[in-house]
Structures are given as C-alpha cells and as structure tokens.
Image (tube, rainbow, N blue to C red; front, side):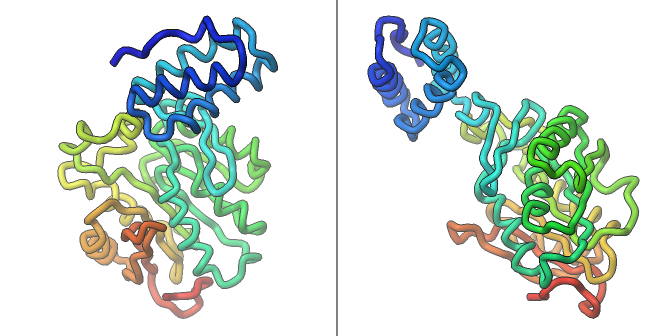
Length: 291
C-alpha cells in the first residue's frame, strides 16, 4: 500500500499529527491517533522542536508503521507490568496477556518477603523475571535464552531497572546446565503451530521466528518448558507456563507427563485460558498457596 504524501509541507505539531493520523487511517491502522501521537512524541523528545530533522526522522517511522511494524518495535520499547523494557530484533515483544504469568505467581506466593529463587526459561527481554522481582524485594533469579543478543538485552533491562544485583542471565537451552535450586520456574515458550505463523498479523510476525514457532502442533516449547521446570524445581516449587489458544488440556497433560502436578489454568483478562500452573513434588513445605 502506498504510504501517501510526505509531511514536509506541514509546519505545526498539530498539522503533522493530523497528517500522520490521516495516513494511518487510510492504511487501516487499528489505533491511528494513538500510534501517530506516540511516534511524533518520540521524535519531539529527541529534537525538542518541530524542525526539518524532526520531520526527516518521523517520515520513515510512519512508513514502518504503515508496513505493519508495531509502534513498540519502532520505538524499541514496550511497557510491561508498568515497567519499560528495551526490545531488539532478537526478543519477543511482550504483550499484556503475559502479565497473567506474574499475576498467577503473586497470587500464590504466601510471603512476598520470602527469598525465592526464580528461573525464567526463554527469557527474551527478561520481562517475566524482572517484573516478578520488582514485586518481591528478597527474591533473585536467572533468565535463560538460546539467543545471545536477547540475553544482552535482558542484562541491560535489569541494570536500567535497578534489578541487576538480583537477576542474572545466561545463554542456554531451556534449563540445561542449571541445578535443582529453584522455587519457581516461569516461561512464555513459543506455542504457535509452524503452519500458522505465515497467517499471523504483521505486528506479530515482526517477532523472531524462534520465539513463535512451537513446532508442528505448537506444543514443542511447552514440552521443553515443562521438562525444564521438572528438572529445576525443588520439592514444593511452582511452574507457571504461558500457553496458546486451545492448548489448555494439552498443556495440563504435558506438565503431568513431565512429572509435575497440574494445579490450575489461569485465565487472562479476556477470559481465555492462558497460564498452566503446576507443582513439583509434595504440597508439604511449599512456599506457595496451592490452588
């Protein structure tokens, strides 16, 4: 689709915003006003005035959005759990549904001052681990990702958020190389069936393929996360794994087959089954409220 005429001829902030909104509306962008204003605001923060440089910076950003790239990718930043996370081409773009993982953990941690050890398998930006650590001042954890560039982004996010002393990140294949010392294992694994990826919205297809592709049935990542959790959790520990649409029963069977005890499938804000919660070993001595 043609991106439309440029914005070189307009001279006020309001006129620039209106021109961008019209182009987004013509391109069928879902939230044209919000997206246009976010991109323009980012340019103005950098230039502090509506200069030729501002317009030159804005124009390719508008073109990228019209081509289907989400605003978060263009800005390189995503808010998650009220924290700002830097993105890169190597990381998944965190989405609000994944906050259900944090809610599921916090709802079951009896004492938020407890010195829990947490592992985040397939950590990406580090958002799951770092969001949970932001709520648990005595907890610490390790994030694991197969992509070294993603690990570098997670390390930078931890430092910027003031959580670097309690969070470490390593390049690895799920839980390989770690020892059984964790109270809680989190994961948002890839869970899109391979054949479905080509039909995803353009905004989602901007995510790295490895972070989306769950194999032929979409369950390979869930299987790997469940196996990793079973290997890493101490008795009484909790696994919290995000799943995709229509995968609730399969995920329950997978965590049970991995040697965990399926407990519940928590729903996201839209009422969709989103997070499988499972227990390692016996309930006795668990640091969690079991439900």
